Image 1 (cartoon, rainbow, N blue to C red):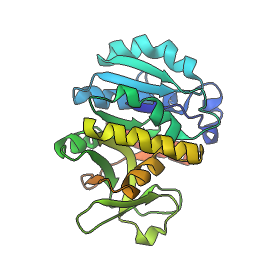
Image 2: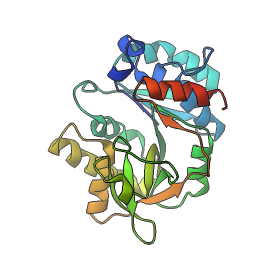
Image 3: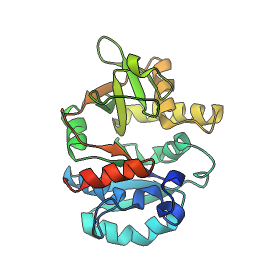
Image 4: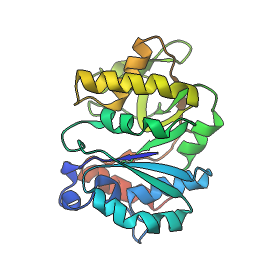
Amino acid sequence: MVLAAGAGRRLRPYTDTLPKALVPVRDGEDGSILDIALANLAAVELRDVVIVVGYAAGAVEERKAALEKRYGVDITLVHNDKAEIWNNAYSMWLACDHMTDGVLMVNGDTVHPVAVEETLLKHRGPDVLLAIDAEKKLADEEMKIQVSDDLGLTRITKLMDPATAYGEYIGATLLEPAAIPHLKDALQATFERDPDLYYEDGYQEMVDRGLRIDIAPLPSGTAWVEVDNHDDLAKAREIACRY
């Protein structure tokens, strides 16, 4: 699954007519962030793909057939009609009915190598498994985590002193079927409490309810970036050509 409903206002003018996931990060017709995400999923034989769309959804719809042919995947589009006014906890909740067999979910604004998907699948077993960068120097913007002594998630938020964080959640999660009902209920509680909350706040809700979430640290030196602004886009274009 790819969450690709966001507007990406800090990436204008690219996102005047495109969702952030379709912003190009390398040359060629396969050069968008979404292309890289689909290529990664196909490379690990995950070919039934749900994409949550919202802002400029028509641009993804127009490319759907070409993307399916290019990567040998079957794409189901889930429409978020509140994408421009609510945050992504609602986006993820909308897709929960498509996750009954489990899901590997990636954010549609993260450029990363297939090593991320491979790491999650290598450590498959826990009901919820988050891909974590434990090496990156952290600041205010990152989605930071804290963990228990046995490496279970205890806290996930941007609103954390970076010095107290174990690492950064990079926007990729492996969810087993048993976790989906709990996730759906937690996400609903989250956006009903505040529609501006992130799906990661839904993860925190699960932890607060006593459910365990595990982590999978990435291989040392994994090059990735969350593309929020033009500086991030420049970094994405630097590293995407290596994949």
